[in-house]
Image (tube, rainbow, N blue to C red):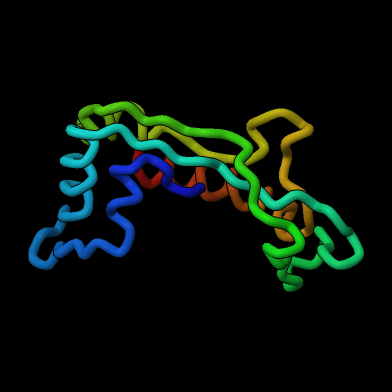
Length: 132
C-alpha cells in the first residue's frame, strides 16, 4: 500500500514527537482523520518470469525493474472520528484478519503463506481468549 492523497504524502519523513505521550501516535492519527481523508493505492508485483522470480522461494528478490509495482486497487478513508473506546470494544477486538477470507483466486501463493495459514486462526483464537 502506498499513500497517494496529498495530505498523506505531505507527511512523508515528517517528524512526530510522541515522547511522554503513551497514546501519541493514536492521537496524531485521530487528529489527522478528523480533518482529512486518506487515499492509498494497493500495489502488486505481477509474476512475469517464474524462472527468475519464483513464488516458492521467498529469498529471491523480485527486482522492480523487471516486475514494477502496479496499482491494483484504491482505498479511500473519509474524514471521521478515528478512535473511540466503544468502537474498540465492539468491533476491533472481535475482528480477525486472514488473507484466506476472500475469493479462492485471490488466495496467497507460496510456501511461506501456506505456513502462515495455520498461524492466523491460532493467533485469532489466542487473542479472543485473552481479551474475553
